Length: 111
Ligand code: 5GP
Ligand code: ZN
Image (cartoon, rainbow, N blue to C red; front, side, top):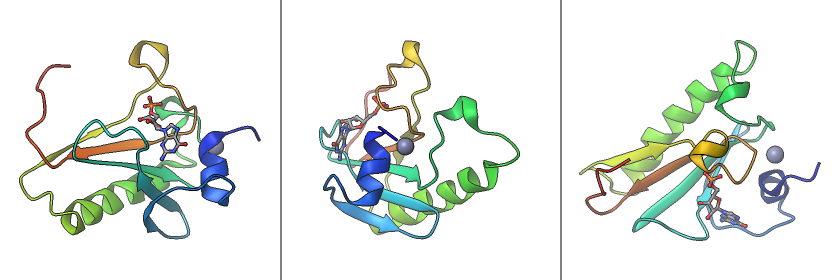
């Protein structure tokens, strides 16, 4: 499959790993928008939030457990933002579900 994030999971494209288990991979965004900018993705190819269903939502629940763990380990005790861009209006550029963790500084409060 011609998916950038599937290639990152496979190790065909290098990335800076932050966390990995059997279901989830997390790595640093190549173009950080905050001092800490991490992407958390399911190892299974899920296109976007629109493709979350009863069949795969347990993976998404697990991703949020991982997000909380990563935030603690990265020292984001002052807060952080979790973002998932879905579709064209949100500017989704990679069509493999991903959650941005943004933190390390006070973030812009605008949408
Ligand atoms: P989206 O815009 O789809 O929500 O987010 C895609 C994110 O993937 C962007 O923040 C972009 O910087 C990041 N990204 C794109 N290509 C690569 C890559 O090859 N490696 C890493 N680490 N991040 C990437
Ligand atoms: Zn993929």
